[in-house]
Structure formats: C-alpha cells, structure tokens
Image 1 (cartoon, rainbow, N blue to C red):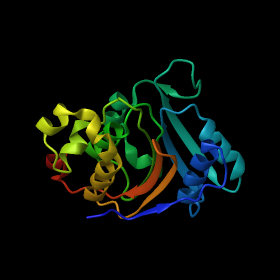
Image 2 (cartoon, rainbow, N blue to C red):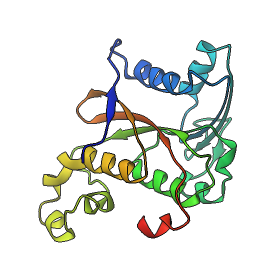
Image 3 (spheres, rainbow, N blue to C red):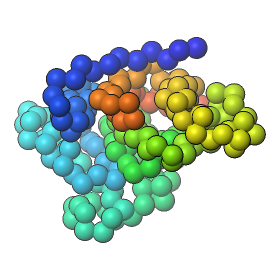
Length: 200
C-alpha cells in the first residue's frame, strides 16, 4: 500500500531555507512550541525564532559533539532518549547524523510523547553506506537477499521508511527532497498501543 505524502515546492536554492519552511509549516497553528532538537547546532531553530516573533518557541537541544552548541545538553541522543519525558514537547526534531530510523525507534519505544507529536526528520543517504537492515526486512526482503548484494537495496530506502511510518499510524508525510539522496520529512506521530513494542 502506498503512503500518502505531500511535496514542498522548492522556492530557494538553499536546502537550509527548505528545512526552515518545512518546520514552519508544522508549527503554523501553534502559539507556543516546545521543541526537542536532537543533534542540532541550534541554527535552524534560532532562525525560526527570529522569523516567528509572534510565537513562543522554547528549544531544548541535545548535541553529541563537544562545543558545537554551548547551549545544548551534551551527549548521544540514542542514550538520552530512553530516559526523557517526551510529553513536555510539541515537536521533536531528528536532524541527526546517521539514519533517522534509530532515534525514531527509540522515541516510539520510550512512548511518553504526546499523541500526534510533530516529528521533523533528516534522512540523507550516502552512497555505499548501508541503511538499517530492520526497515528493509519490514518490506519483505530477507537477510539472505540483502547480504548478497547490499547496494542493490539502497533504492528501496525511502519506500521502506515510508512503510515503517505508515505502520506507526502516520497518515501524512510532508516530503522536501531537493536532491535524490537528501530527504527532509515532517509528520505527526500517533501514540502506540500498549503492545506496540512487540512489533518493533
């Protein structure tokens, strides 16, 4: 089954501006926005704050690299997510290094987020770097197939990710794709049932 998605028209040559617009679309109906920014320098949200002075935007940042964002909590987001009370946040920003599947999975497993919390996500596919085996298995490929010719399956990365989101109950994904290997997404993540962990 295909997953519904909406494309943002590219009006600027800068990917940064597209990422800003994606987030502004998601918060346009909110007066107060509490953001958990996982692995960010703070530049995106500082720009959004300046452009949206009519909104109260409160940002908590987590940054793995020491000194990259002096205002951030220092640490690995994958280790920090399990212990966080995610219900404090209206939007969780996964502008992280590596594939976004892992922090998203950690958020779902944590389970404390608000129903229909906003997720903004960066998914950059680097050539010759593998994508998570788990999401490929979810679209009925086998480990044997993938291990035989891993690079053959890279083209299915977006389909696999959208399928994963669909199975999480995501109804709509806004997709900004300025170039083939760079994908920026936004969606609302519904709460999972008590037994959801068994399906991870």
